[in-house]
Image (cartoon, rainbow, N blue to C red; front, side):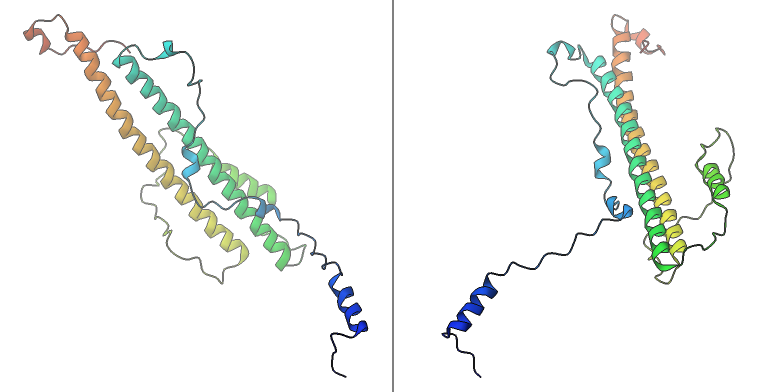
Length: 224
């Protein structure tokens, strides 16, 4: 029988259908631990270091002369350098944690539980502790000719979960070293520029009141 829209029964059915509540949305999936850590895609946030002092304080704190101003700039450079390095290390450490958590989650999903690891956890912890230990000053670790990882090389898709995690961690470590060394080199050049300016200012002060022939001598700079 053809559908008749003007029939009373059809109108009631259509009205009842229209008044039905929409289907309930599926329950939200609880995010995995690795999904709660945003992937590291940008290092720009690391440059933001909180102020040490209130910049709205009274104007009496303004530098009295160019020498004091240069000294404050040098202090700020040291403070900013230390803060940015700490921020970078935090970002790299967080990304390392995310990679490890993601690998652990994949193993639990893809492989049966109870599979014995190749290395005992205690031994693995000792290995990692040795790797994280600070370098001893003056010790030759013979790392001058270490091959650099090609960061543009795509990680093969057929790697195991652990091999992929190792590749990602090695790439992260290599990138972290390059970023930290590059930032330190850049800040050293900036600091060198202001140290030279300060040295010129101190030399000019030392030469005040000297005869022309005395100004050509090597005069020690005033103590900083």
